[in-house]
Amino acid sequence: MFDIKLIRETPGTVRENLGKRQEPEYLKWLDELIEKDTEWRSLKQEADKLRARRNAISKEINIVKKEGKDAKKLLEEAKSIPQKIKEIEEKSKELAEKTNWYLMRLPNLLKESVPFGKSDEDNVVEKEVGKKPKRNFEIKHHGQLAAELDLADFERAVKISGAGFFYLKGDLALLDIALQRYAIDKLRKKGYTLIQPPHLMRTDAYEGVVDLADFDTVMYKVDGEDMRMIATAEHPMAAMYKGEILEEEKLPIKLCGVSPCYRREIGKHGLDERGFFRVHQFNKVEQFIFCAPEDGEKYFEEIARNAEELLEELEIPYQRTNVCTGDLGIIAAKKYDLVGYSPREDKFIELMSCSNCTGYQARRLGIRFRKKGSTDKEVVHTLNNTMIATTRFLRVLIENYQTEKGTIEVPKVLRPYMDGLEEIPSKKAK
RNA sequence: GCAGGGGUGGCGGAGCGGUUAACGCGCAAGCCUGCUAAGCUUGAGUCCUUCGGGGCGCGCGAGUUCGAAUCUCGUCCCCUGCGCCA
Image 1 (spheres, chains in turn yellow, purple):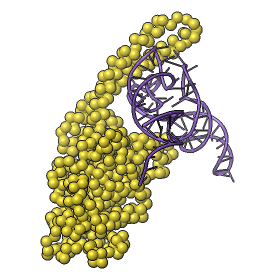
Image 2 (cartoon, chains in turn green, brown; image 1 turned 90 degrees about the vertical axis):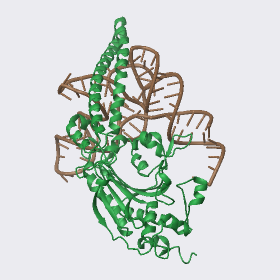
Image 3 (cartoon, chains in turn red, green; image 1 turned 180 degrees about the vertical axis):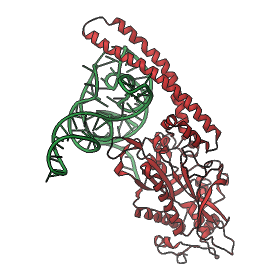
Image 4 (cartoon, chains in turn purple, orange; image 1 turned 60 degrees about the horizontal axis):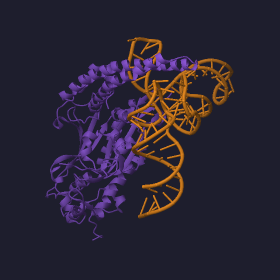
């Protein structure tokens, strides 16, 4: 949610920043918002004056009545006021709803370091790490190989749940858990608190986290109940401190959330053939931080680095791209995409997404903190980054670690979580 | 699902038609004091403001009234017990 005070105080700066988004409609919204807000404020003053008058009369009536005198004249005036207030109120309510509509939809102010551009083609690759593996055999599609090795069953999942679902089996299911566990341990060592959030959330809480007008169609809802299944652990973690005032010394709050994610993925053609890349349900370990505004950039780099380290330790070649002004969602002020190498397609595919949401998300949720040594309250900043989305990783692992004989090598750092297993399928297991 | 109880500031908790939402804890500023502690004074919801002040605020939404935290209706949530149950 946009900060209306910024618009009132420095409309020029806001306009300039919004302009970078390359979406003329935003500037139109801004103008309309300013107009409606000005009108709203003047109506509010009008209504407030009437209320003040009514309150004064009410007090007088009380006094006059206690004295046993006749309050008829005062009562008449008092009775006439509520109708006037009601008329103004109707107009001002409408205006307030409109300004709120704009505040919810105007995108966050961009950081200076966000590259200027129109679409994802203008995203800037800031670094590339790792050596792309050279293979002199044809790399099999990850889903196909998993099915051949009896490590995944897509057909039976389709039978009971439909396309986009799968059974993970045996060593591959274990690999999925190993990935999560490895990511969790890494974050726990860095002081992040492990969180298993609720997987269902009520509408009012979800509204604080996303714009349901846009987002609702991609979520699963529970029939007959006011509940939605979470699309990511980011959502219940962000909403966790909804409406609270935190003490500054408790910041930063660093969380490591682990949960399945449920997404309808409506209109996604073929769900990327059969496989794990784009599915209705997957497991994810998510980093989330609430911090003081001045620390936002520092922790943004920290969570990006955490994810990069994970990629390096798993020996997956990756690139970090700085997402450009035209391709950023409305919530983030800055975003890195971490993309991993797919040797089969010889391109980088999206694995993790790291966002600095500044106060945009927290303002809407009403999460503030009290500054130490003062009584002032300020909106906290929120940051989030994927640590691991297991299905996407299964794909790149199966591709990058595929051997010529059609097996999958287990990354060294994951072996302790796999009973020392070096290769899938296990020779012994067969 | 049924029955009962309850939702008030950062927290606990009073108020149950009429000036300023009592009191306590915690917090902040200042005073006092060898230091610390204690003590004393003041301050702190939110919105608008021409910075004088004014409005709103007691889960949410309607209503009654000149006036509602307080009365009426609806609704959501929480707690306790019963029921059900991995």
